[in-house]
Amino acid sequence: MTATLAKEAAPPPAAPAGRARRSGRRGRAVALLFALPALLLLGALVVYPVLFSVGRSLFDASGTRFVGGENYTEMFRDPATLKAVRNTAIWVVVAPALLTGLGLILAVLVEKIRWATAFKLLLFMPMAVSFLAAGIIFRLAYDEDPDKGVLNAAAVSLHDAFQDTSAYPTARARDGQGLTADPDGSYRTGAAVSPGDTVTLPLVGVAPKDLPTGAEPAYTAARPAARDGLSGVVYLDFTPGGGGTPGKVDRSESGLPGMRVEAVRDGRTAATATTAPDGSFRFPRLDAGSYTLRLPASNFAQPYDGVSWLGPALVTPAIIGAYLWIWTGFAMVLIGAGLSTLPRDALEAARMDGANEWQIFRRITVPLLAPVLTVVFVTLVINVMKVFDLVYIIAPGPVQEDATVLATQMWLVSFGGGNDQGLGSALGVLLLLLVVPAMVFNVRRFKRSQR
Image 1 (tube, rainbow, N blue to C red):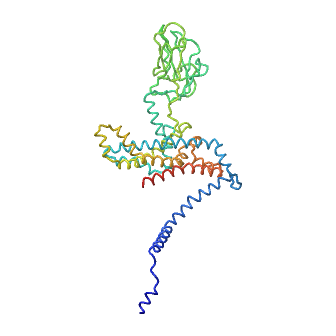
Image 2: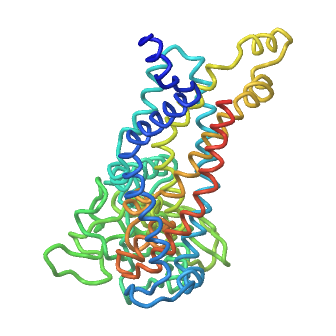
Image 3: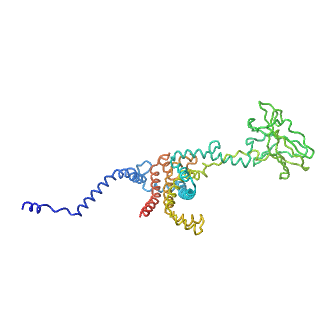
């Protein structure tokens, strides 16, 4: 009887639905507890800076006076900011497209070589180099001095292999000694000469140590010409140690070998000669009449110094080139991973049907890789919008404004001398607004691929 009453007095067991709800609440609480550190970091490092930047962009440079949207209107009136927007647009259009294309081509080609893993490793290694180190490397590589910059050293070597350089870039005519300068940099005799004459052409401005190897004294070079010929000497009118007579060939003065001399009549070149080691030249047969002797400007051309890679015209393409060096391996590896998942039966069926490799690449490989290519492209777009290190390090100070992008302009305006953190915050908000659509697109692509 007592046991029966105890059973009747006991409370009914909890419903299964109630237990499930309590279990779900406990699970959510545990999940929130584990996510709390990450949420705190996200709020401190992302949400708070974004909200603070939006608020700061509504105040003046000192941060004390509310100016509303004035910083945003000023941003698009500033020529430097407009140039930064233009350069950022160039980066967004050019760099991701080139990287995606290079990555696709390399990923396809790497599949056909034996040492594919080693090749991928070599191409991916620049990703291990920081942007700071890469910027320093390419700043040296792009140096305009051929003795320092490897690219200009190669350009100068290639140029000199096909075109001779002048041995006398500093030479000039001695004043008052019969030679007149032309606007194109050449020199000509002021007085007319005729067959049978012997002419001396004195030059200065060449250091004795810079004379070509094999140059000989010019004292005995000016020998009389034949009756129907014309002779002379081109020499360095400078006597080491002082002395000598200007315009006269002294015993210790050297000839200038390899100098081109032209005999000009009625505005046309009648004959051409090249000076010997002692500076002498000779036109053996000339028609009777008056001539002008000319030393062409090519004799005095400055040596080729290469390309101004970091000049205003090429600085942005040069920096994009450095960016390609770093990120090509990244694009190749991601696209290669997508390429390895392609159905091989489709490729083999196309080959059996007679399709060549180009047709397979264009009509099968690229369409099947379209989702991967899109993800790589959008990821690179997000990355190039935030590029800062390479631009700031590689671009020299005088052309910094020509190479600036939104990220560098934001820093320069805020901390690099502008000291206007209101305008800098507005630039930061603009950069955020430009990046967010690409981020949303990428997240949606990932969600669709997971389904």
